[in-house]
Figure: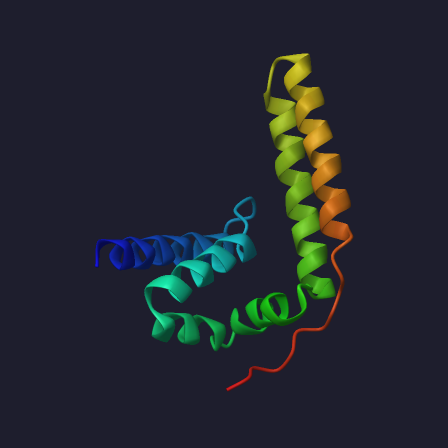
Length: 126
């Protein structure tokens, strides 16, 4: 019971962060929604079903769950946000080795992310 409650709490926190990410430029939406879906799978299949069939977020999540792919617009937005957030971080940190570390992480993340297959979001499945 405690475990289920923790998964539900974690899922709702991730949904809230994902919703904030839809409006705040440096907060990612999709990773939080994927995490929320994973929590809801373990805590409440009913809430997971709701999230997977949400008109805005459902197609993105289903595309990932069924094909391990992202759509071109999602990939484009994510690339812009990744580069913007890392650029800001690199600008703000004072130490050179931190800048090099962040730049290395940026390159690795972009290479991995851009190798993901692209696929148009499917229509919502019942």
